[in-house]
Image (cartoon, rainbow over all chains, first blue to last red; front, side, top):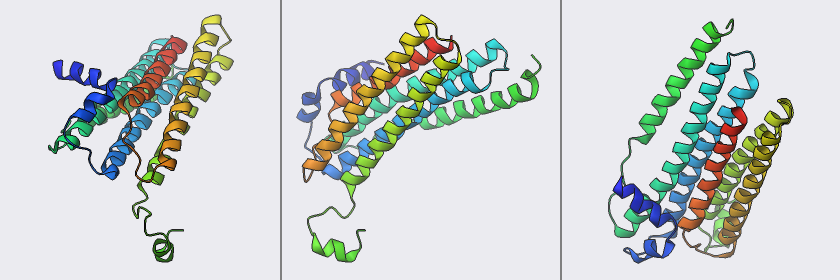
Length: 130
Length: 111
């Protein structure tokens, strides 16, 4: 948690990132940037999914609809915050010549997506009459 | 487009086309943001425009413009320099802030 707070400070202090180590080949930085953007797209897709659940499943009970939509929106928020955090950590590791940070977030996200998908199946099978 | 002949003509050109790929990644991400903004507008149009809904939707559109300007600046920076500087953490944080704020607007619209 303290590590996360330190990273948050780094988001807004580009000079501090530059003080660490030496600048890597620009291609590595660009690859890191593309990975960040890919995670941001994932986050935007989750947010879009939240809107879509609300808009395109109007026959659902209110609780299910809002619950699913909010879960997807929250997953999008988490995903985007994690995207920038991981980007900063990778950037710093590359400057210092360390190993890139490992993360269990992809596994966590795929579990959440699987749970949401199962919930959708249950909702479609059971929730229609409600 | 970038066959062996083209590469011989321009030896300075990065064979991995890294700046171009990064530019396209920005374009894709902006497009995803556009989809979210359009869905927000649809939600307001569909659900009867309450004052709070219109405000949330307008906020979404402004946030989309913000994201677009970040993407535009970055794409310009990528196009100008031969070996572009690394992306600034401040801009990364701003892009993520736009995304998070869009989700908050979404929550306001859904509830």
